[in-house]
Length: 111
Image (cartoon, rainbow, N blue to C red; front, top):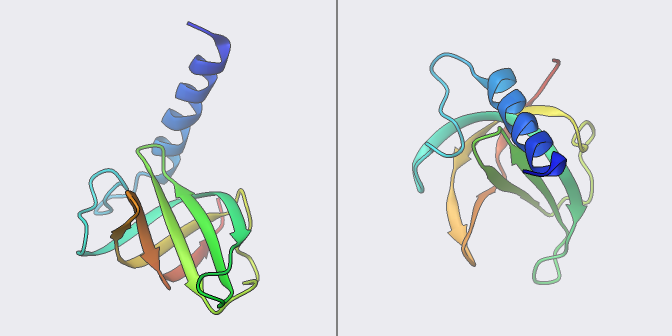
């Protein structure tokens, strides 16, 4: 096994451990089209226009899976940056084979 694989596995375990909260689902457990509350760390934040409208996209990772968050009509949101811990609420959909949550309610976490 390579060092890269083992450090990646360790990182996922660390994320799961740091985001485990009683009563909260993991990204992997969260059902599609159901209202959910999730907690994770933002892996990346990108401005990616959708249909001519600005859209801020972020990847939320909790160690069990990754969810794409999309805020339509936004170019930037203060505090939404890679490495930031975040709690989000909304419904998960699937687009082009990827799990997505549009315009989630969010809370910046301090960990």
